[in-house]
Image 1: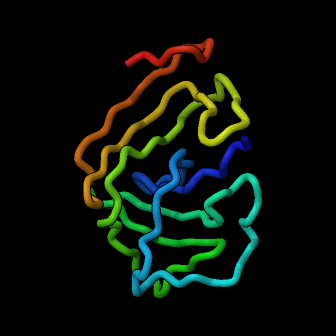
Image 2: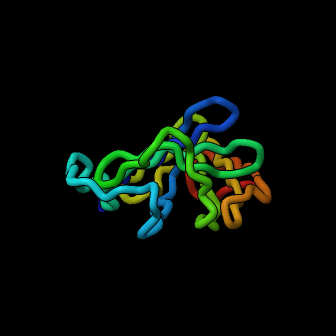
Length: 134
């Protein structure tokens, strides 16, 4: 298994990595499937990378690269997303070459329901990489 490239999240005007694979809705009128295989490799099984933003309590899709593109300049309200976003922060405690399993000093978890941010929590991870502290 290969470690996967992170999605990008813009939060409080700062860009950070997001360790989750968020879906792209099929048939959305502002999302185009393109013939770009630049992200078709083992570090990106989903064949795309998104740039997402949390603004005023809502999650938006700003940009896509790889096999999809966002049409137009305005961000798209990601009302199809219900998930807990994981944002690794701090130094790497334990590097894992599989999926999104690398462990950092802490993780910010942002709960999203139908595109709306409904909560967040921070988990500090133990230095030996075995068990998280909440």
